[in-house]
Image (cartoon, rainbow, N blue to C red; front, side, top):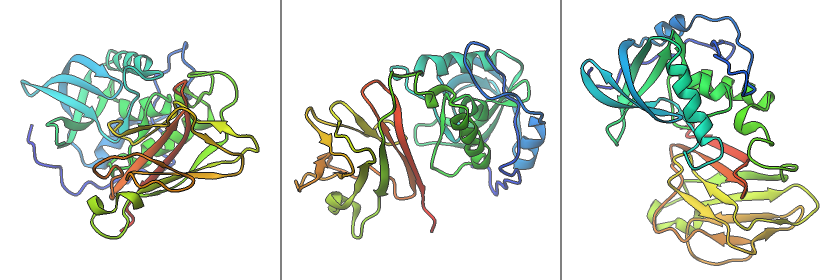
Length: 289
């Protein structure tokens, strides 16, 4: 398979397009609508190639033999929980089950900086990238993908049905705190490395009660960049706190004290996660330029 990026990908599938969902009765998920997955791949202008799955690494990556070459494949356009995170094992197990459901084919889009093939993976004709999101076992990435509309629609379905990670009972107990991400300032004026104190996330407490933020985590979609709220951190009811990448203290501010930028200028996703592993809020942005 060529390593060249497939050029001129044209997405003609609308937000109303549906994909088949292979459902596991033990994990609540969307009901399977009628579809033709083959039409979706054809409309994208991608070529499906037969693949032999060697092993599943986690909920969004696997190793397979493609054209006689062992290749690490990352499911294009989505991000699943890490193995040590809430529903990480469930996401991996679901991907294994999906890939066992029928012949596997992969439409390669491009190789990433880690030499992984980013691709749309089908099993028995079903695009599992979309199925993982629809079942609440992965989320869309902010980076542009040829299946953007499909995975975003799948996420909306999963959130509406409280499937997987969107079910408050999946990763914790009690009501989800009313803490929201108001904004992400990812590209302040000047050189990114010289404006770390201006690269910030603002969160707000919409309730009237003070919320203890000890042990909470703010992370990006790569999961590599994580800020853990220190012991004693709290946000009063109706108030806001900013988390800045830099290290200059100020009132109503928490400092990440990172020595390099965190938030991608071209698009990223901010996740606010409580100590039990529940996703309390998600803020996704993309470069509109």
